[in-house]
Image (tube, rainbow, N blue to C red):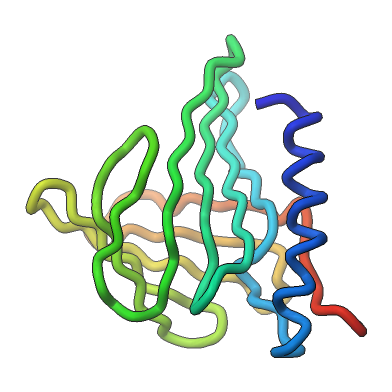
Length: 150
């Protein structure tokens, strides 16, 4: 994925602000997030844009040789499993804990894993913490979408 493509995604997110205009409140997860990764590791992006009852999340990995993979996660806060498309097929359910925290349960052929995704109070950092232990992954917001009229 080139930076030009990222610009197109950013423009798409800007237009998605219309979808949030009725609620008057931006979902803190909506936007473009870039992972903090050591140099030489694949770049990781999360692109979240508004959708009915939640948002659509596109997760992208970009290798140093510009090979990339992407996954599409429908994020609906109904706690029902939804199938992903793309590189890592599985079913994912989301439970909203509060305005800045969701619990994500992933089912890969019967093997369940759970993590928590939380946006910082200032809205600039997304932390994904595995429930079973391991290092949290930290993402910085690169682009935000605000409701119209703000």
